[in-house]
Amino acid sequence: MNRLVNFLGRALIACLFVPAGLAKFVGPTPFLDHMAAHGVPGELLPLVAALEVVTGLSILTGVCARYSAFALGLFCVTTAFVFHFNFADHAERTLFLKDLAIAGGLFVLATSWPISRYLDDAASKPSRLWRLAGKPATS
Image (cartoon, rainbow, N blue to C red; front, side, top):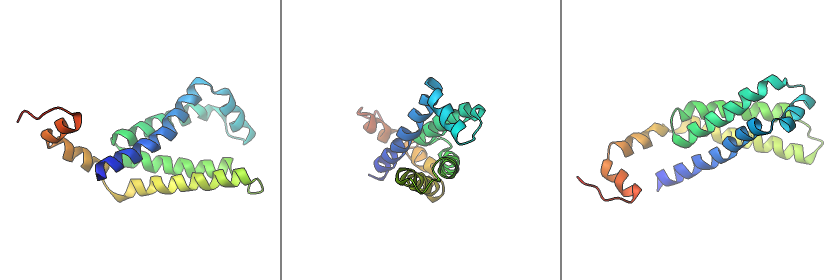
């Protein structure tokens, strides 16, 4: 049960960042406009998009996920302070707090347990992998 909940949680995090990063590659204009409105150089957009896609997939797969979670946590804190610091606007205040909450969850993910343990445990027990895949174990 823990592995399933763990995977679902990581998948939900990836569902936020991977499509957001891909959208920045596919249609960069609104993102560039938003960045310019806040004084952020547009040259950073490809780096931001790559960060979101690569770290999101890393968290989903569990490969180097602790580092990725930490990096995305820092990214969310930065985003909150750069783009959503207008507390007079209720929507911006809400986005600020959501970014901080997401960062908090990512920091917990980065520091509370080794994700690779789940992958290592599954790999060391091939019969469990076959059962998860819906196939009978041969051993």
